[in-house]
Image 1 (tube, rainbow, N blue to C red):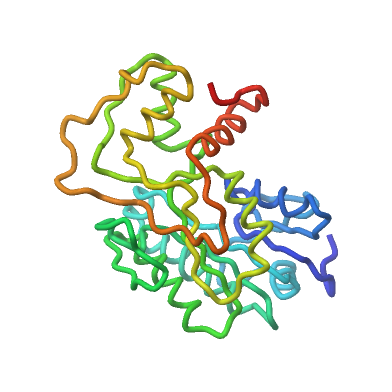
Image 2 (cartoon, rainbow, N blue to C red):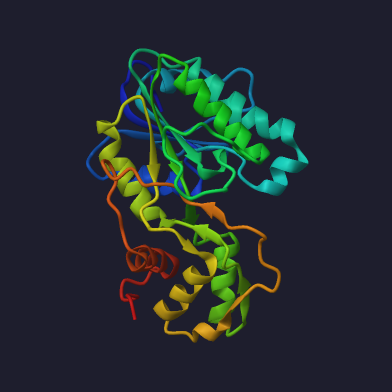
Length: 293
């Protein structure tokens, strides 16, 4: 498609990702002009090819970046195994990829960067946006480095720190749900805490609120912290399954570990666990009649 001299409201970098594909759809609902990037060869309308590891982006990709009003940076390597097995590639994608995007931004384009609780070590649950990162992992180091790039720049940025997104397609939470649905016992921690969110709540907030936030770090943790044991016990009750299938893991952590921070309530609405689970299971089963039991 011809993009020279054409202004796009939004560009979603990482449009093939779970969050990116849903966010692109939500942004398009109100008639916004939305483009998203893909690493797949494509002639699909509203998608452009972009490889973040390329030292030189295509002309089409460069023009799209320059002509976008808001850029959501969602692309990256997030698997702990993949990061640890090839940290150089991970840094090239997660950090240098962002740098390559920033080098092309012009004017007052806003860049929305999705960060993570991993910029903190999980030693407490009440970190605020004013606290300095104290990461305990390579991925946390990458996220903290990217945050710092934006904080020290003159760009119009928004850093959104996220907790655990409930992915219907993959991840240990989806795997454990499959197990209890099959009548199998699961063993989870009572000393590790999480603030889960569903992709619909997240993308709705991003699509409707991000225009009002400028040059800030914000936290999106819409649910009060609960342990993994309490989360799966709640899920079992929600599904009308015996909570006896949820057991405390035999060897728990020596100290409590948190994957939750204070929610930025001035921007984002707090939700209860049932609302998050209802959204998750509606998408998982694509069945509108699947409500709280």
